[in-house]
Length: 253
Ligand code: NAD
Image (cartoon, rainbow, N blue to C red; front, top):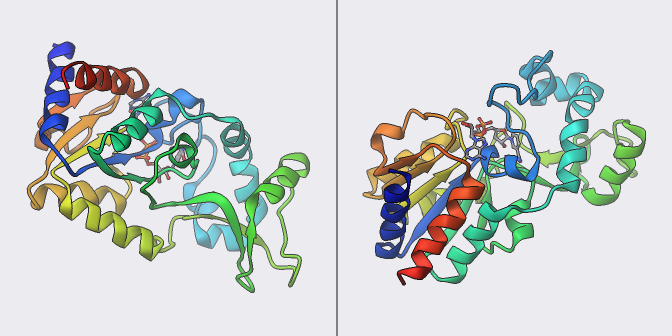
């Protein structure tokens, strides 16, 4: 049954020329970065998301945000792309994949070598002062934060620095969103990987794709509300299945 599904996805890929991958935290769990919604992921244990991970909470108590994000930051800086990220790079190199739309902030797609990546929820490459909007490269700021666990401040005005990740209550970055919407409207096959599809407005993009006639493949450990709309649904580890799909594709090419 699983092998048939893998074959079927390889066939769909072969027939498609404008594939878009839509990824969530689940593509990075094999790299050691916990997702937010799997049982026991721990990210929301003992915290209120609206207090630690909203822009209102951040402005009110930035140290609470930084305390919460500390373990994720530590894991993310040490994480490496896994075979699922690598498979998407290969699919792009072969000319099948036009874009990756990701909700992840971990930058593992770009670090793996994917070229066209829309980071809907931002990234950890930069930080911005919430007072004067000065932008800083995040690397030295993160390195210092990992040592002292303190809220970083702007060297120009003393304001609090926020990593360029999108918190609850913030707008998505407009250029990334428009690029992602355009890719979703123009794709013939969207492959959803490791997303609960519970975070809007990102989760609306697969529907934009299906309304424009695209087929859907879903590769996720758990059910999603779009499973019924997909041509193929595989409930398994993305880092195992995507390389197998690539192998089928390249054997039968
Ligand atoms: P989510 O936590 O809501 O859902 C993750 C989904 O991935 C779950 O349904 C789970 O069953 C599935 N999954 C877990 N491991 C998997 C694997 N190895 N193979 C296949 N599926 C797997 O994640 P989301 O939908 O991306 O939404 C959460 C929000 O949290 C996003 O906004 C994202 O920005 C943020 N987030 C990002 C990271 C990251 O950058 N790596 C990590 C945690 C959360």
